[in-house]
Image (tube, rainbow, N blue to C red; front, side, top):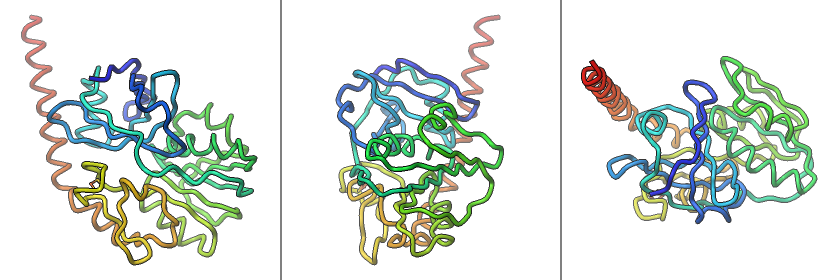
Length: 261
Ligand code: FES
């Protein structure tokens, strides 16, 4: 078991988890860990935000059952594997423009810290309907220009990086054709060692595995339409799992109230 040493709410659907996991301390830019809250929980990939001593932090956006379990009940984690995935290719590019959405700010911060050391100039467009930018202070201390917007636009850049949503990356790529663009793909991750094939992605016409060949790929080589259609295969089951969990929480709350009376 891996103890959670801090659980900090940024707002109702977004939190920072700090976990004691000494085996993750050598993680590199843009890598992730596979987290399983309990024996029965679904394993989910979480990007590594920061490493401090033997502790690692993650930014969690509450979107389904597993992330809600982490918010509501977790005080330790049953299984933490990693660091996983190929690191982001760090070097001097020149002007690097990031497009992020939701939790995408976490891998963006991890990658940006390394890119800054290579003297890249950094800009960030965070796409948000309600103007919320997680970890705003940290973001503003790292990026020279930060724009929170509802719209994705064309930009001038030596490299574009997009992360947080496949739809976001598809749109950024559509508007910025011909520019160097590295994107993180979102897929389900089950074993993270290349056996289950659930994370397969079509890249340049060949099958690649997001868990170990990725998660970073050249955006112009990814078949985004295929990826997005596969991502939506499990929507119904995910909705049902979340509804069931909400009922379970309600029953637990009722039991607690009745024993208190
Ligand atoms: S998660 Fe199973 S092969 Fe990638």
